[in-house]
Image (cartoon, rainbow, N blue to C red; front, side):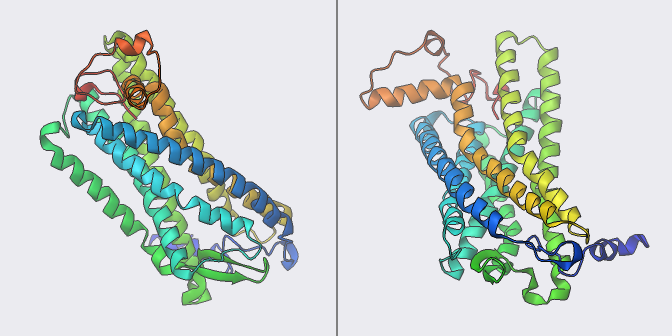
Length: 367
């Protein structure tokens, strides 16, 4: 590259003028056949998105019901969990529209404004979910490692202000969707699609705009939150292993490992695939087979990310003893005859998070 002041121009010059995630011109300038990929999306996306939608809506609905039932005993973590569950639900409600676009022969058959709204809702809640996980990890880090209360029940305004800040920042990051998202007819696919049209301001600006969008997603949407999660939970695990907390420490260790591993299992494959796709756009000798494989990989790995919104309530149910106790109480109030386990009966009834057995919110181990 040239001077450091021109690093961005050098980076943009690396990509061809027709840089686009939907660019299918490969070696020799031939245009790839999109029939197989379109058929794959039509079969795969509706099936998986339908499962994610049903499981996620039911799971998060139960989670919100449990939170509402125990609203008088909310801890700081429970407030974050409430916002996280709302973000997951709003993200999940966009899946039927994306599934319909893939299954429909003519692609996106809805209006242009609905395209912008759907894409923006997805983006806002995608960022919001990841940022809330980072906020929870930071709160747990300060509470456990440094014994510092960043939030408390006496300062409920601080928690709500943080959540509001997360929503506003996520809304700001969705501005590109309001600008670029629109229904575009693809001559190669012979169908309309709801996509970001970076060429609307001129093809010469297209590489710069899309590259900036990709870098924003990679850095702000994955790398920075991942760094926060890894740092905070690494310090927490080291602190717990060096402490004398017995069974509680072991439960905390299990909770942290399960949730962090689930996050990275769901989102890392897609981000790696997207990074490979971003770098491969500058390869003029790329074959149609490689291009098609990358597109299919993006389709499959992105669906794993959507499943994360469905997995969260399931993880809470398996690792949160108080959550299971509250859920059993709700089911009994509805007339279900259930025999509680000895472990749940022995849970200490204190004002603490639904996701742990700690009576002190500073020792709460969640997410």
